[in-house]
Image (cartoon, rainbow, N blue to C red):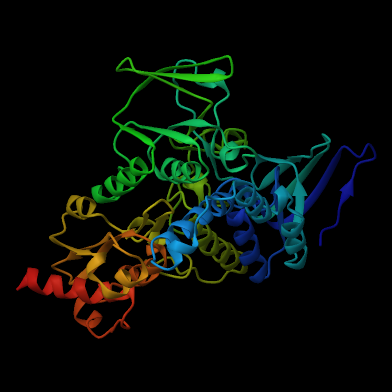
Length: 485
């Protein structure tokens, strides 16, 4: 696709494209694909595996690890099936399935897709060196200089944040990468952090037979409705995990292969390994941001067309922006960015109004998310507390899933909660949280209702099929009717 002009010493090459994308994960791939579809010539720069964190060390392997335990618990919760299930998980088979879903950490299939999509791959570390210019240092040390006619897009994602705790770095802590690529589950594991990664990996390793201790500085899943964290913590405790909330770690040491974690309370916990799940940091410290007037290591703030503030030719999408650190939101941003770049390159109008084609409006108040814990937690939009902080007069309607016939039929003693946060003035749902088995598959209906601002009066005409778990929508409407009467 491009014409290369190599110097005689073969150490430097110069290539020109319409768009250069730094980062070949799902976000970078989507930016590139949308731009190519819009008629642009695109180069994609990737220093690791094409497909990124999600494909090899996060979303896919973690969900593959979790699914076997979910399936076993589902069978054990239904009489008839429960009597047929008499064994424990086959750990080797679980890990083999995980490896299959990472393609054994090979990106050959992803590279083939780039070729079919007419996106040119440059393997190496990309750095901004000036206006619309990127240098790529290949693994063998050669340097290519790429120039963009129209734009450069950064989609380098995020990395695990290692907190500044005495001794922590010296014990070689696990991050999500080591945890999801595990070959032999440890006998015991301490997890620092009670967020989504901590909750999911606590669930996965408990399933694999590891003795798990979770140390959360606040409560489990603290940013969500409080019932979510309580339900997951209770479930983990019921399966033998030690969940310690409002715990502060003062130091960490490794001796004779074991890790000792000392808490501010004076308690000590000894485990085979320690996993850090305390947040993420942007992968922007070695991108050459200072060459374009930005600060290395910072999140990249953008407008809603994903153009970086103050640098009109530079775009960013995905985790590196700090907008919404979720793969699906990053891909949503990528579609908007790729289309906006192509439109601006063609001199076409850009639809930058809220909910327009070239913007990522949903990042502000309509982000869906699933925690694949036991029970699952699925949510979209605002919590009740967040809605009130925005000045909304809200009604909170709770429905116990066990009271819904379709949910009760799925498992014996079905438990869980559906919570709707309803804006009384606007007459629409601003947020929904679902807690229970398989609630992830109920989330998109709630996302459509929140994004579309479907009036409560119209939702009465969206009749849920009987007997399905979706009948919870009818129970919510009935509850709101009683509350507002």
